[in-house]
Image (cartoon, rainbow, N blue to C red):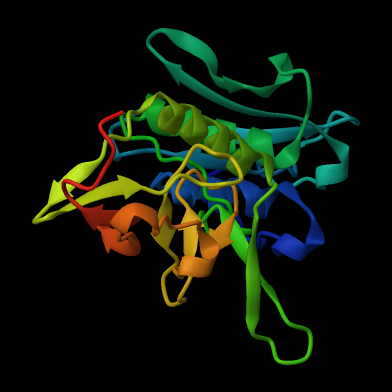
Length: 256
């Protein structure tokens, strides 16, 4: 290896649509420490090398394009695969093999590679971060003239869609039994759109959003839900443990 292996070039910015920024951000999100290394003076190839400590195994991370070039910062449009390899007493082997994947999707390959490297290095892998909605699962729609928040829309980035489906299945499997608080019986309000989740207050706003992440929001008013008033049934909306409930005095509920 060249005696001064560190790169003398800079990673291209993200808006240049190259792989370097994706790989570095994905590794950073996983808490993986790395450096840029140029193994040979006469060759242009540069790699990201991840290592937990000076004596630990070194994972070499690079991307290949359709012309056969090897560099961690190739253009995304020409991406063929991302790979991470390690050489130790067991030989040289893949930590992540992007060549075996059906699609060379730059973001997906960068995130999968970073997760595999984190696992190999003994780190606790983290879920990828959705930069479109900051992992909130939905994003606000603003009024074009006043910039006020009109409503929220579910994030359609595949990462968030998968998380929403997983949460929906979890909520669908859970029982939502009424709870008694003081002299009141509280029934959790189910989302009227999914209907998997309950409703939890959106931080900073006087609205409640679906906990299953479908994007549906309501205001906590009697106009939002039909409340029964006949037969002396005194129902009202209330929040309990962060969730929206319909409360009524105990003893007035029908026995069926």
